[in-house]
Amino acid sequence: MRKLYFLVPGTGGKFACGGLWAELKTLRLAQQLCSAEVVTYRQREANTLFLDDVLQSNNLQDVIFVMSWGFDVAKLASKLKAYNAIYHAHSAGYGFNLSAAVPIITVSRNTLGYWGQQAPNSLIYYLPNQISDEFRNLNRSRDIDVLVQARKSSEYLLHRLIPALKQQCNVRVVESYVEDLGGLFNQAKVYLYDSAEYWAQQRVSEGFGLQPMEAIACGCQVFSSVNGGLSDYLDPGFNCHKIAGYSQEYDIQRILNVIQSKTPALLPQPNFLEEYRTENITQRLQVILTELNDFFDHKPLYLANIPTLTPSRKAKLFLQRVCKKLGV
Image (cartoon, rainbow, N blue to C red; front, top):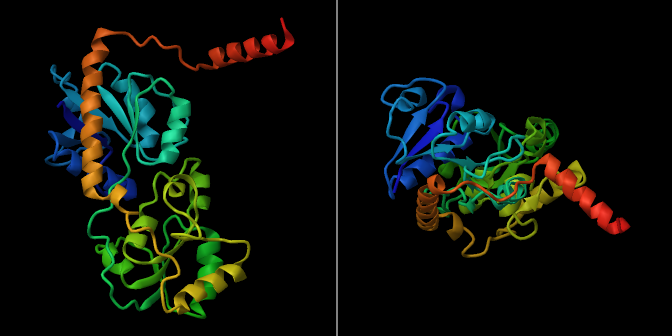
């Protein structure tokens, strides 16, 4: 197994976010299977490798660089063109293309489909994010009626729905980092998540949406948008409710009905979370890493020779199809 270098701009501070934590979780899983380290490339950090220093080494053929920060991938891919590099894709829609020499691992089937169309000649794999064991239903008494995290929430949620709900039930809005998020989910009856507006402004997709799944794992009844990667696992009417459903009044009615119910309105299928737990993720990662190592053994021996869907080739194929229809 080649050594993995997980590239991140930094490991905290202004770079702290769900995507970073998910990437570091993947690093820790990879370390169970092979040698793997964090490498930063925007800011130097104590006791952490820095990309420019790493690239000074003359022996990097036994290394695979793992790119993940969508806004930086195009630049990093160009910088690492002479090396073994893969893209660990969370969100989709950043607007760059990758050569077939760069395999892609996606965290959602939504992103898998995007890259399946965008990079038809690339090796593409599906490795969902891990839901760690701390997220489980502790079957405790729940004293928070409605829980919502302010980050990524829509204006409708924060400025209309939440103020209206606060007049009728106990609502808690989280506006900072929570150390024990699993414990907090176990205190709440309902969790609200509405990120469609946020990601539309970012012009990229919701990559996975960890919080709704973590909330479901902890026994919360979830009202959520189903944009991007959320559509992988959220199933309105069966394991969640769709938020922002037609009118504010209808949202309030449905949320209050759930809060006042003696039994959970929706329960996920018994095996729903197994796909996202450590054992399955580790097994999938083992298969993927084995194939990637085989690919990087093959790559120096042969050139990429499958025609790609460039704009000019798509135009040519379109003209051929038109001419065929016209009998020319």
